[in-house]
Image (cartoon, rainbow, N blue to C red; front, side, top):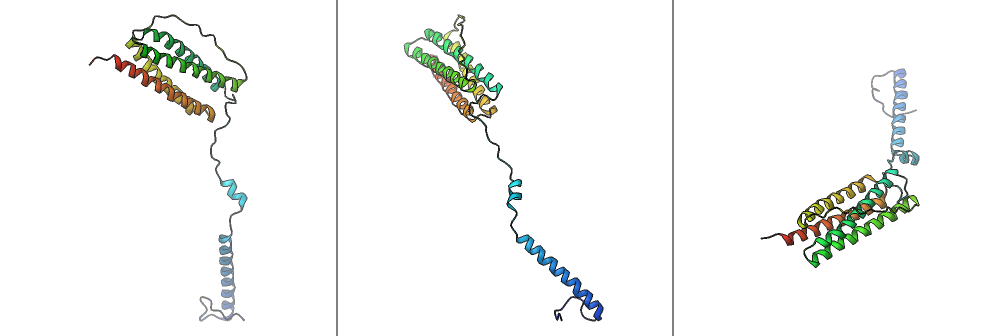
Length: 200
């Protein structure tokens, strides 16, 4: 016979005491089951299902995005145009030193164009060699030209950074960021050239 004490035992007749004991056994059994359930580890499958996958950049210059292909083509044309402009503008420089700085920028813009053309080939498997037709427009006055190009180089850097943010291609994003740094460096060189012409 169970000699344990159960709540409400005092003053009970045998029938009520028996019913109380049965209820108490069920309560205790339920509590023990709950404790065991709480201590059990979650099933591995359930934990895996609840994990949220981290977003990942996909591809590496695989050409899966038509928008990215068109963006690269646009940048190629821009770099070729800049390369041609600086080679002509260098002839307007007031000194050989200034002319050399402008020719260095021209050469770097040419390297940018070749890097982007290589990127286009990696993306599409096709050569993209646009025949840049030089438009012999009059060159601006030297200081005005430096000011104009400073603004355009800063805008070019901004465009590269925006492209780096928009693409899901981690390789292209890195390349665009590097090109943006170069464009800002060009802007700094142009500012320094302009500073040499300022009268104090």
